[in-house]
Amino acid sequence: MVKHCLGIISIVLLFMLAACTSNKNLKDHEKGDRPVVDRDLPEILDDGVLNVVTTYSSTSYFLYRGQPMGYEYELLKRFAEHIGVDYKLEVSNDFDAMQEMLMSGKIDLIAHGLTITGKRKELVQFSDYLYLTHQVLVQKKPDNWRKMKWSAVQNSLIHDAIELIGDTVSVRANSSYLNRVENLMDEMGGKIYVDTLPGDLSTDKIIEMVSNGEIKYTFADNNIASINASYYPNLDIRVPVSFSQRMAWALRPNSEELLTELNSWIDSMKNGATYYVIYNKYFKNERSFRMRENSVFYSINHNRISEYDDLIQSYADTIGWDWRLMASMIYQESRFNPVSESWAGAKGLMQMMPQTAERYGVEDRTDPEDNLEGATKVLQVLWDRFIDIPDSVQRIKFTMAAYNCGYSHVLDARTLAEEEGIDSYRWDECVEESMLKLSYPENYNKPFVKYGYVRGIEPVSYVKQIFSRYEHYTQLLE
Image (tube, rainbow, N blue to C red; front, side):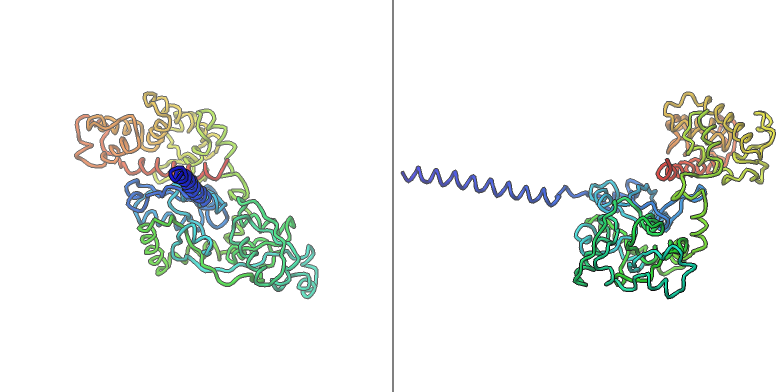
């Protein structure tokens, strides 16, 4: 009988233990526990690439007249140079998506001005703050405000956050602005209705929605609200809704070495003039902001790079290239200036030399269509000469290098690579290295090098810069 009872007790204990284990696993799952991503500064340096996410906005990252720009973009470039690596950019406007990318190891750094909050500090660790700001209420003046008396305009506006009780504020999901509305309700002891907007909407777009009358109120960081209000004069942004807040970049909690290096760099930047020049460029220079907003070549408002986009697409199609890649090449050649002329006499969008233009039937090198038609014929001839290159991307890079410095010099670089046992069918880290060596007499004087000296850094930099800019174009343009 005793043995029977002990057996029953044992079975019950086993079930209880299993239940506890099951509950623990369930809680672990509910907390979103995952294997820790072991990638810090040493791994980034070994890899040679810093993976970053930022936002596509009028202050963080955008294209203007074919050139990538933005506060976060400029700082990120400098930090990557500081640690001696390349960078790869992803774009997102949703903090939850950013945090998921960070914790999964897809990216190493959220390079975006995030408000440091206690809630977020439970998920990520923050760098030292980049700047201080505070949140303000963004509201629209009456439609005919310019014709109204000043007192009448003021009577139509909210002047204290407490007046929001019983009204509706539209803010982005999973944002510090949403947290601020919730905290404000607790502080004031009153109900504010929240219109939750999609998490992928940028703050700039939401501010524009207030200006257009699509929504009544929103919250925004004062520096972002101020620069946007310089373009939308019908907005009032004078009502503060928070104290000063620290804005910083975010890292994985275990990226201690990267954090230390980043904080050291931030400290050195703040002690110099460059940091403040960059900040003022994007958050204080109202004239520059208005010029971008009014330009059709501003990617935030228009899916365009230059006034020649249609022409570029047409000729890119004739050789099977992505038009954005050809656009990047044209930017490299002439900055889209059809009358641009180099010291050597190259002229036009694709900087054609007089002899080349004559050979390919280009009568007027300053005529965009004439110039592009001739240049694509040249590119097609060069492309055909590299028919033995199996990888299409590598073949394009060989073609571009040949367009820059001449087919014969690229041929020499391939021969040098073969002689040294390097893959002559690959440009990246192979033939480009041989091209660099042809700047030195111990290499260009070798008997198998037929065409002699070439300043190898030019075609190597040329190809790198075109493809780097092309990555920005593919991120931000359809």
